[in-house]
Image (tube, rainbow, N blue to C red; front, side, top):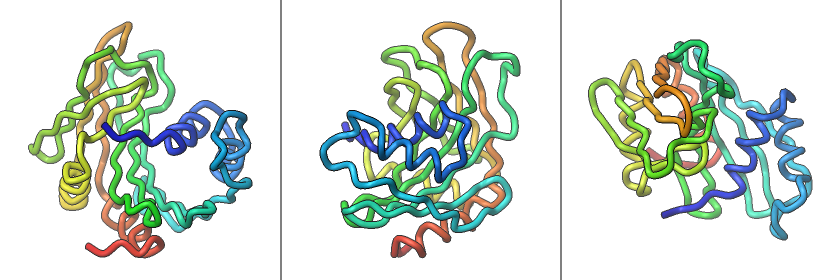
Length: 190
């Protein structure tokens, strides 16, 4: 199983504190316990947006990190107690990591549960840890990203530790354009 502690820390700060993205990334970099490899505060640069998906880049000592983020158009049940769910794709070219897909559900997921992802009729099971869901392999990450770039909608279903299961509907309009922005910024070839 892969671990992305710095990315997870950034996501937690982004979702937990109502700051601008740049401020949130700076806060994540300065947060105690971020690890000895934490670089000085990194300012995030917004590369652009396309229909609900926003692309960003920031620099660490090891090199650029490029990612896109989007929110669902609809979440059910509507009154579920949770933070805002978010879908992300991240590239870390200096670490030879690309297309890392994650879905932050905004609540602690049931231990041992999977999150189901349906992209235009193609189904994937994602493993869970804490409040997030991840692809099990880098090949699956790449397949999910390629499928999202061609489809119109993604449906994400998760089961919280407490409460009713949730369903989030993401429009994928603009996803391919935001993906192209982070690919270009981080030198990822498709």
